[in-house]
Length: 303
Image (cartoon, helix red, strand yellow):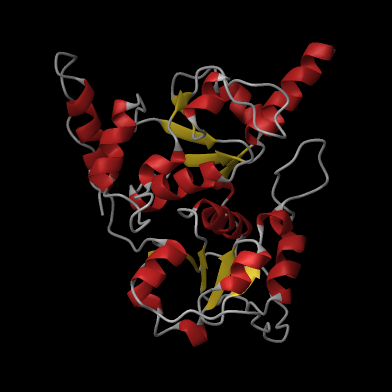
């Protein structure tokens, strides 16, 4: 694992060839386990682990990990706002997890077939609400199949309800509000990272659900997919490759970081990468993302 001190040191070397004197590297962080698991590590733990497939029902039925239960993003989005994409409340998520047989405190492994962004959204929600025993399957369904591991088709009946509850304190540092992002956009000590495509960022593409095209003032564009070996084994890239790419994009890894995208899904993946793979603790995901920002900006203009 690459630690924060090393990353900042690498970043300074990368951008500061003729700049100010290089500061000494920060003391490395204590080694810890990360919430990333390989197919070979879980194939013997399937019976004691809840596996959640974050894809549409038809895709799930065509092939999924043995014993996996299915949830889709629509199940995880609240309908209580005038804009889309906000995560469901804590009690609603607990009900959904209970309905597919999750056990309080038991390990949950989440995966998708899209590079991990949909799965990372659920990882982020579980951590935020207080279920910390959760891992992301590196490479998703593609790597699982490439590893010649067993795949089931059709419907897998959910275990009986076990009364799933969130019993541990949630991690509120994972999330920021519209007001916090407003303040951060004027704070030189914060980097706001837009994890959408360059077309969404520069306004040449308008995704459904956004109220106008563009980006949050002062944000830096870094497409979430740049962290993934898209089209090959779909694993996360090496830490050195990701850091170099982020620094080249202009992201100062020594600062506090806020990520956002269209509805907080792709940015949840970048939050996962920065926190888990790269070891940054001071990274938060803007749940409302561009859907909320564009809505509230237009509302302010009307008033």
